[in-house]
Image 1 (cartoon, rainbow, N blue to C red):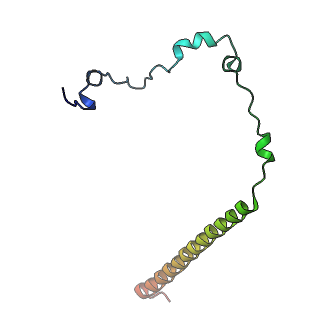
Image 2 (spheres, rainbow, N blue to C red):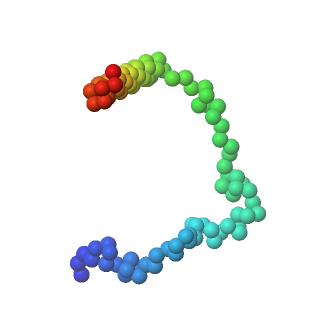
Image 3 (cartoon, helix red, strand yellow):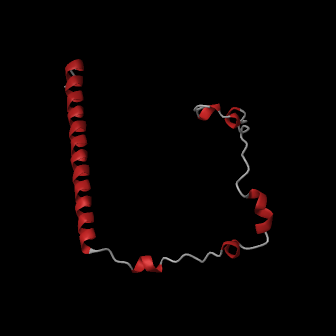
Amino acid sequence: MGYMGFGMQRWITTYKPKPWFGRRKRPGSEFSAEFSDREFTETFHLEKNSLENLRKKKPTKKYLNTLRSRMKKEDRKKMILASIIIFLIVLLFVVAIIYIENKFDLF
């Protein structure tokens, strides 16, 4: 027996599609009655998350310097792009005025 490929397996060819606007059973939904009378934290033994350690951490100077240099590069790129766009808009406006002046002899 050789390689049959993924699409040739019987469970794939007999698979029925999901009904329109329907949804399949969520995994674990058959056990929802067991958890309904208990708290979620009691069931899974979870503690409340705290960000105290994250607030205490301070970034290093090296990291701050690299971050500042990246931000300056991004700002330079944005300023160059903005100035090019403004220049093209002004140029288009001037060309449009010249075209209208020649076409209709208004000025």
